[in-house]
Image (tube, rainbow, N blue to C red; front, side, top):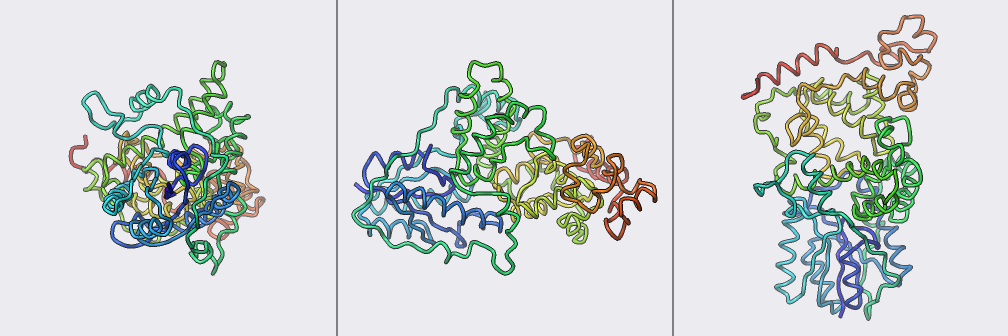
Length: 478
């Protein structure tokens, strides 16, 4: 018996139930299909995601080859491609791990119907979530929209979770079908090649993900609860892009973290990290239950929000030229590395939606194109959370003061000085609000505002009041 294993956002061998089941059944043909364009296709990948995918597929291909298998690359309509490959390899079944985003889930249903209509057996599995979205609900059977009770319900359900090891060998079919060349897909940027910073910051692939997890569990996790909000320190796991492409799964992370500290006094410290994993889960559940989340406010009253249409302000935010150092540092880190510290993500998102009153969809689109961990559920749910229109949303009147955020979470300026080097000569007391520095201090630091670094594009106090006025104008807002 030969089984096609359709890889998608599960680009790993360990903890991959679709692959494990196929190996137990007989010969395996691993397949990845580039789904771009066409009716019902998932959202087109952003540039940073395409870069990561190229590296991840190369790494997966090497891991499969070491176990006697080949990764078959094709592009086009999945139902047609899988049907053709099944005929060429005499496969009788197709396995895949489920997707939960609206377009992906709908397409999977169509593909399953088409394949079973051809007499093929289809089996699907969960490799991407700790629990299925339909398995956790409130007492009234509705999806959770508040994180804390969701976290309690999830934690109670998944105690003792385990993940399978990678198969030592993968049974090969009688003959291998033809494959596209990865280079022919044009996933990597060339003219210009803007990915130098990404290459310096990241190594895609399952082995790199496991190495990051091991290094995190060996030390930083013990201080995670206290230091995770400090962007100038290496205090986070940086596993989010690996999670997005499934180079490591949430069950693997959960099992490793809980197993490392089981029965020890440090077990509670792991809880702060696992809450972040659960927040990712919460976002996935929200998107599953509210499929219009990428385009529509979860709280409908925000449909009347008086957003501004200011292309010049949006461009300044994108370039990291707002005049607020912590905001600009975050946006420049994003452009250079395809990633941004989570605390800073909240600050820059608050600045766009509240200081500039620019619709959250513009920020979400920019993140989608520039983040190496641009996950649809996390991206839209978190942008709506910051904007105040989503589930368990931060109240709209909670408007981050970018100066205070910088002073609190980057008190000695390690983060700002790295990403806004033109301000590096300023002392800690003036670094986060250079416009308040006396002229002699600016001269000593080699800074001329308006030449070396822009003045603030908005005044915080006035921008905050404008945002509050817009909130109070919404129907049903006290």
